[in-house]
Image (cartoon, rainbow, N blue to C red; front, side):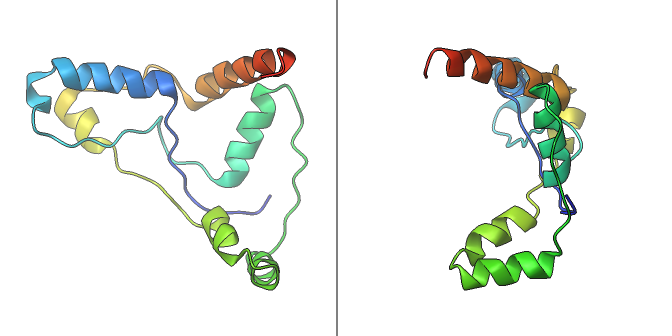
Amino acid sequence: GGIKNARSLVYLGNLTDAIVLCARHPLAAGGTFLIADGAPVSVTELIEGVAAALGRTPRLFTVPAALLRLAGTLTGRGAAVDRLLGSLAVDDSAIRRDLGWKPPFAMAGGLKVTADWYKSAEGRGR
């Protein structure tokens, strides 16, 4: 519950929208664009968003990062803990500025659609 990092998310609907825009927009030719759903979120915020999309209450508690790193080292999972605690955010300002792209789905909407799909797939035994 106390992880303070920054993660960029990309919902599939936003990804496909950006790809279609790049395929059609004359200024996209030869360009490289990073995309994200919006402002980066922490792992804690992501867990809270997924829980809300699933209609659940998140059960989070704070564990100091140093203790998580120690546990990771002792169990041979230090790299996994580093990935959990680290940030992975992109700057999508180029596609927004140069092509006028805005993600059609907010993070909460993308998580809700994904959660609904997951629940329906779970019921079919995936």
